[in-house]
Image 1 (cartoon, rainbow, N blue to C red):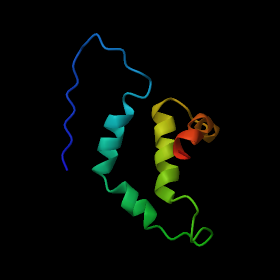
Image 2 (image 1 turned 135 degrees about the vertical axis):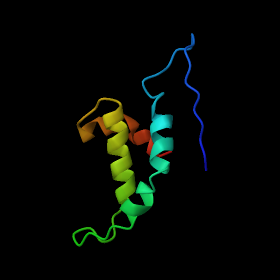
Image 3 (image 1 turned 90 degrees about the vertical axis):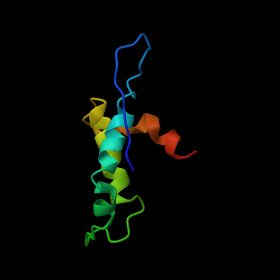
Length: 81
């Protein structure tokens, strides 16, 4: 799958979430999701939340300038819908 982003100057208003689509497309090219989910950690052999979901959530927060995982709270409702 090839995703092409054309970035150009315009009058549109961008939200603070705008760049996450580009980050997500780049991450998909790394196979990171599959590699993380293939990890077998002895202390967490059957996680309730996949390793990739945790890492991707933290990467999304870091891309938005949030360095503390507690900043995920405003987005919790998005996952529960």
